[in-house]
Image 1: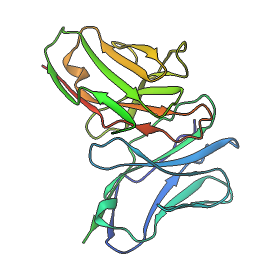
Image 2: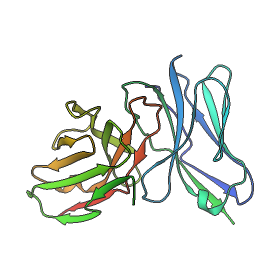
Image 3: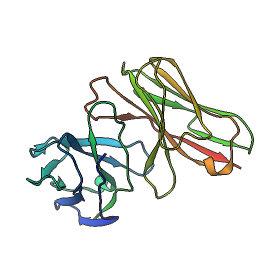
Length: 110
Length: 113
């Protein structure tokens, strides 16, 4: 699995876009980028994943650079309920369980 | 009801005791996982199972064992609990297509005194 690097913490004003970066310079061609979040001590929640193309769903957008060495998760209008730890994971699909790092603690501030 | 249910949700026990954490799921998924989380750290994989007859060790399996009793049930045992096994434990499931989406239970908080 690709090693990912995320900032340990970030702040974002409520109502603004939260842009969470992730570096994955060793990612291989068949490895996806997954994003999860964990609110307080709840079980992590899947957000989105992508391979090469940018992806969007009802929760967030994922922007992957053309060289695939980094990506950004975008929460377009952050709310207080988006305060959580966000995990970026690089992994191939198939038979490799996901490995969670320490993630980025996002604090949304009123 | 939750799709992935863990019992007990909280447990305090003493060093040397045998403890079982149970996980059951109603999602019909073949794949089940046990993760451990320590304060300030990410989740670490203990064991995983891709079907009833399949058991695989994760990165921190020492001191733990598992049993896959049925497609829907995956139990984690600590044969002789020790204080450094105090942690939050999560069970998760995924389907056989493994798109990368894991479904987690609410966690079992274990304290070993």
